Amino acid sequence: MPFGLTNAPAVFQALINGVFQDLLGKGVIAYIDDILVYSSSMEEHVRMVREVLGRLQQHHLYVKLEKCEFHQSTVTFLGYVISRHGVEMDMVKVQAVT
Image 1 (tube, rainbow, N blue to C red):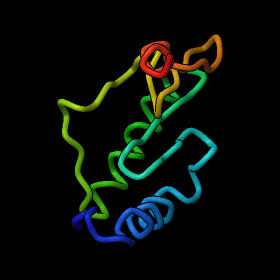
Image 2: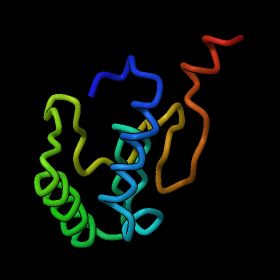
Image 3: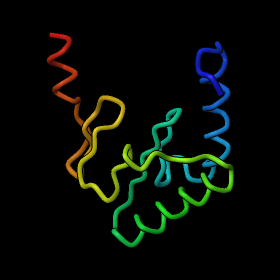
Image 4: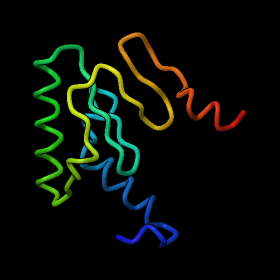
């Protein structure tokens, strides 16, 4: 779907919300084409990543492996740095504004 169309992002977000409806806020955060999988244990993380990839495949949605980061303890997501210590702003983004 071309994102130049006015409603394309909203339609795609609705699709993604439907695909992950029961997982949102329970191990998955999805914003348009950015999907974050989180967990408290490696076993749960592996299970959740498999579930997410399986659902994407079932709905004929695909990921670019070169854009994926698997099993990270710290990630940058939507301008925030997320780790087991909490969430903080990405200093690269802050420096760009100041």
